Image (cartoon, rainbow over all chains, first blue to last red):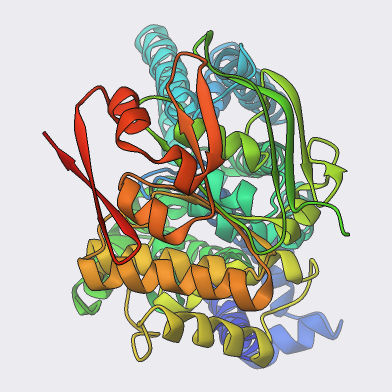
Length: 324
Length: 257
């Protein structure tokens, strides 16, 4: 029986894990900072805690926002396509962003332009897929999915082409962008703003999404304006993905695995699943990014690799303890 | 005299450009039960979905409780009619009680959560289809017949005055077929609900409905009281197979020759 009290309790626990993630992110690194110094810096007393606030905090916030955006977008896409295998990138959004970003890096444009072109590419892919799938006004899940997969494949080919002709010196940056990397993050606030906005817009529709996940006709018969709802989900998921990809490149896995992790742990009520996925995805990426920059410091690992390495065993464990 | 629960005026239904139902008029008063019969692919389900307002008619109008169905907001339509589809699928899994509770959706505001009262309605609905004690079971562990009964319980939890049932007996064994038909007969009698059901068994249609609508699938259709219209002659023509009619204790039975 779903109840508001249980939901708030679970969200409180997840908020605690987020706080833990941030604490770790602020303290860990080549220069260790004690909790006292972090607190001191937070209270404006200066000292060595400042490094934590000025360098590590923005990066941790960006990681939290991107993780949250990806997990939220993944949960939304899974409802929209009624397919547990859907992830934020399934409709070609990361492919479009990748093409934009690779172009910018290939021509040696500054970081801001890389972000701008990535965002433009993400939006371009979004509208291309929607336009093609929506052509005759009746877009089915299969058609949307197929169009997305094809557009993603086309983008993949373009990216491979640009990688093949790129100079040696630019390849490293391109590969890190494609694997997902928070070290090159330009600024953190647009992603956080996008996360807050998309959660605020999605939550009022959460119970209707529960019905949509059970089937379009059923949802319509129970009083859901299905076409409007699907448009809302599509736009929200696309914007959330675009904001994340622009900030941190295409970090894989979070968008697919976090909604499933949360679903396995607490059930499939979108009213709880959406905010819980955002919190869980955010804290997972904060942990992963902290590990990515400290494990073999001073060298940095691409965080997308770590999210997969953390996520796979946890997911398999949860799957195996699920009652038959 | 209140407005009919459901009214179709000059209603035409097309499937892929072919007219399957041509300009029929239909009105269903509170407490009335109507059976829709026809061959596979004759357009019974499409007609029912059209009556429910889930797809636009090719021509004509549908009134739910006296108001134009195409102008009603989806939620207020859901308070006037409940629709049982042929297929249920849950790619993500959910418990039996959660599924039954989805029937309460049109009664809840945007930010509401299901209350104890809603849970009680859902539990009562589950009990009435014989699923009491299975509230915590996962839906995908149910048998086909249990899932069908769960779908019916969800429908009952919706508490609409009009039920549109597409093959409500599919997957059900004999005793549950009778139980479900008795259940809707009782709902029609005591709560003055209207029931429209797509059935494949003319004997059950004769026994549990007041009127029948025969859909031939080429635009021809025939409607009237079950006594007049469910005869060996009309049904043999409808199904394209010769039937013989037997009567026993007021119940009709049709045997294929």
